[in-house]
Amino acid sequence: MHNVHITFLGPKGTYSHLAAHKYANNYFNTFIESTCCNFYLIFKKVESGQADYAIVPIENSSTGSIKEIYELLSRTELYIIGEIILPIKHCMLVSPNTHLHHIETIYSHAQPFQQCSLFMKNFSTCHLKYTLSTTAAMTHVASLQSPKVAAIGSEESGKYYNLQVIARNISNTRPNTTRFIILSREAQEVDSETPAKTTLLLSKNKKSRFLIENIMILRDHNIISDLRARYANKQLWEDCFYLDVKNHLTTPQLQHVLIKIKDFSRCIRILGCYPRNQQDQWLPNQLKIRNKIQ
Image 1 (cartoon, rainbow, N blue to C red):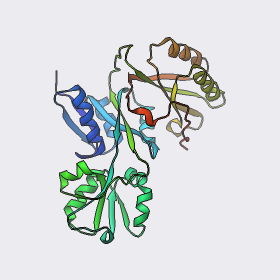
Image 2 (cartoon, helix red, strand yellow):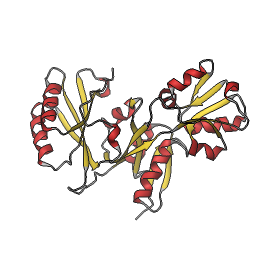
Image 3 (cartoon, rainbow, N blue to C red):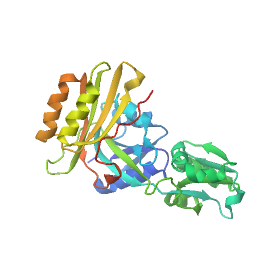
């Protein structure tokens, strides 16, 4: 087998990097890391064959869905072949001999700032500097060697940069977890006995009663895990819906539902049928309609 290339967001030390290692350790003896500076390039690397798999975060238990990922999924031919639930334990990291009351500037990615917004209220007079990743924030703080700066990131990654933890578990919600999906150019074959999840992408004419009809069908069959309403590519005349269904694609129950919804759907695409992560209890097994992207 050729060397497996796995691409993810940011340099080494990011949560995506940790998720990539967690996935790779379960399936491969070795793998080649391929970093990217944005989600668009991650998708392109796999689509073009420069990488075999992509690991991308899709939602967080505190801040919800990552809109850009859903928009990219509506335009790609890649398949979801797996998922990982990663505990996110944000910490405030500093250089040695730094005290909380000396900090004037804090660096991090936008997501950790959102996920730690309650803790950040204690630093209302500090300047918040946004970086491309938590690793970029830690790298910068380590290079400054100043008692007036701090970064938000993981304790494990902070060790790479000789940063010390000055405050642990600062997320708004505990546990704070992020769901990552694994993308590939080929769909995965999942044994029918394996607990699986199927993700569907559906679109409709805005004037139809599509949403109401689907809610009724999925509710009656008791198979819905999660539903998100999205505007695809910001075209207001077309709604795009992502459905996570807690069934294997081949089950008679799901096949029956697919036949029904084809009658009033412009398009149905199977984004993937893949093993269900057994740690996904933080996503309630009931209908959740996310806010629409305007």
